[in-house]
Length: 139
Image 1: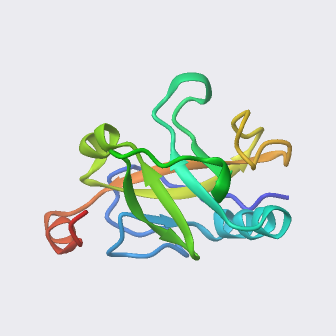
Image 2 (image 1 turned 90 degrees about the vertical axis):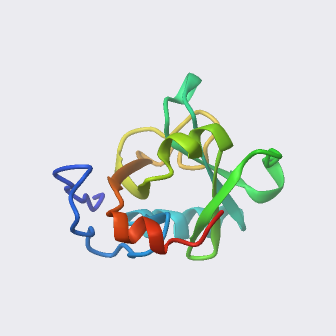
């Protein structure tokens, strides 16, 4: 059974249990568990926060050697040693927001490594407070 995290509002100041403060990206324990399973099967992977199109705006998980990072992509940070990237224009729209990788039941994006596992990654978010945003490292 998939462990689910309830987040009541994208602007809640309270951190979700298992997530980290002071980072642009973090993950729930359920997401970290699925990530460990995928890494056990596929080795080193990365996330790229999709900007839409075929798979909506899901965080896509790829083998490191199978995805080319674009010149305008922005590295948000790392989850347990796994890099998390987003396109530059999308980062500009979301730069005041902490992205929280979570897991929900369902099928992953057609090219994402979470596909076929009956659970998929989902990005939740919360707005940074002015103090949190000011304390972030520049990208």
